[in-house]
Image (tube, rainbow, N blue to C red):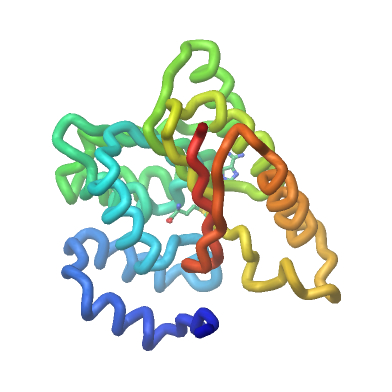
Length: 218
Ligand SMILES: C[S@@+](CC[C@H](N)C(=O)[O-])C[C@H]1O[C@@H](n2cnc3c(N)ncnc32)[C@H](O)[C@@H]1O
């Protein structure tokens, strides 16, 4: 049995070189984020964006909710894959990064497909639940302290057979390191255990990027 290999920057580049070319604005966002220092890590990996695009196209996904948008790389990547009548709703609390994301969406001429709602995601999710708004796919990638709340709202907001993705579930590998007992590592561990026992969804953890859980509502 071959174990999963570690994807370093060179392998990530190799994958990129052997996939289709990134859109010029995807490249611009990546370059923008590279200059931001440590927080550049917030952006999903290029492999994850290829995976999302393939998944969206092959599953006829039209309406997407993203919880945690940062400077827009994941939202723009997904918007490039949805059909003409598709749309993406993004939730983020940070006005500055949301403005940056909006400028990139406009530059790519995708601003009509992507809407950003500013504010605590929990508040917007509750509104959506009251309004009975549903999505084909939800991507959870915001504050880890609220992952459990985001997940429970998402199960309500996703259509039957729809998909929920949750990023950072392997937390740099710290989930299996017994010497790591900080708050966020424990939150991720508890979250993963909660998902394992939830029979409203089918799920699996993919070792892609920082670990991503994919769920289908049954
Ligand atoms: C990991 S980043 C998202 C990265 C993005 N998906 C990408 O690939 O570029 C997390 C984002 O969640 C946002 N966030 C943090 N707490 C939030 C909250 N309570 N409500 C909404 N957004 C929040 C942050 O402002 C940040 O932009």
